[in-house]
Image (cartoon, rainbow, N blue to C red; front, side, top):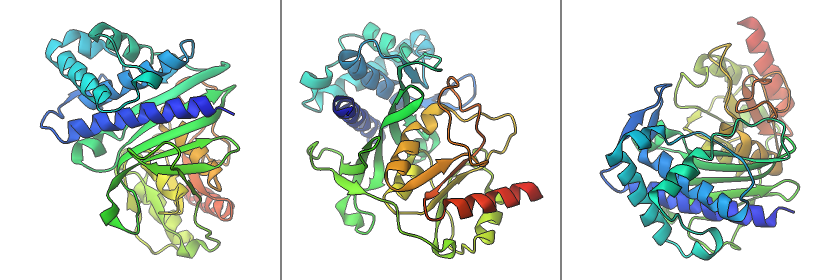
Length: 338
């Protein structure tokens, strides 16, 4: 099932990854501040445009819950021109036009970006898109991800995560960087190098860890995104002595899904904060299909039916099936002591 959706999503995410690489390799990164004061780069806008453009060509009636909107671009001509130039360059760098099309004009580009304003909720089909997840990581040259997921009847059924800066082979850095992870519900999880043939995917699975003392965990770089202090207490309770691996974005989900790490914790630093669905939809399914379990810190499944946020959930606990219950118990013990 969903073979067409997976293929379109992979090609669109790969084109967006190439766009981010064009930006990274130039001196035109640049950022502006949104109303929530988070940085937005020209790559965010360009990636959202090319992905939604591809979805519109293949599935024109599907709504998209995306992170960005075009209001800043409509107000700033020079910024809009830079994004349009990027979109054209990225689209000409592949031979996918016959499958996912190209964007005809600047106006169409703005229209596609704004197609991501959908408010979500309980609908038959919708896509969740984060064009550049981990913008601060992108700006500092660290880890970031291009994330796209199809949600059907409130369940994630297709997930794609592009990680341009993640090693192709973590055991052999000389192989270079740039991978695309993909998954379809009930069909397993896969990875391939960016630019490699579509059918060259390799199955991935989480590490077989039964003793948490031998595990390692991933957490956010930004202390404002996740409670580093509580997570250190949890690690101590689990007997984990390895230092945590800190990286931005859903690259954390991807890393544990292929066995680079074992546990991903994201504990809220504010009682009022609500996680965005585009920050977890793809990673949630990728970990589940690679042999893991993802819940919130209370053990509840992530609920993607509540609009643009996971308002029925608090925190994230992701780990392999063998140790998830142990990790969750440690999380709850530390939270009760706080």
